[in-house]
Image 1 (tube, rainbow, N blue to C red):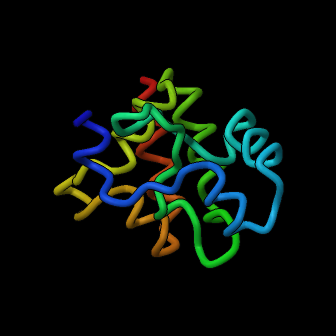
Image 2: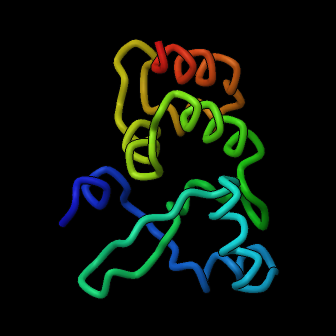
Image 3: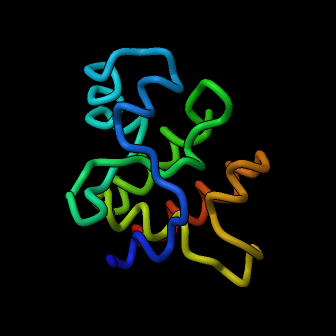
Length: 117
């Protein structure tokens, strides 16, 4: 089991993401490519999947894309960004993804921006 699989409990394969969002699989691939979503290859079949916590009901967490962009500007690749978002930080407290889901995007983006310095 990879480190990401240890950090992230629930994953959705890309076809499941398409179904939840009500879009085509091609659209989900585009969302991953443009940084709206982050995906990783997981499991014994090496399937591309997205953390379930990136979705809220039938849409992508609003604050995710901008945060992913800031992490990319700080030099993080997709796997590093996933690890950062899902690793507990005692100073928050909690995980950055939890803070984003609670609407604390400004604080999380400020912290992500500081990673580049």
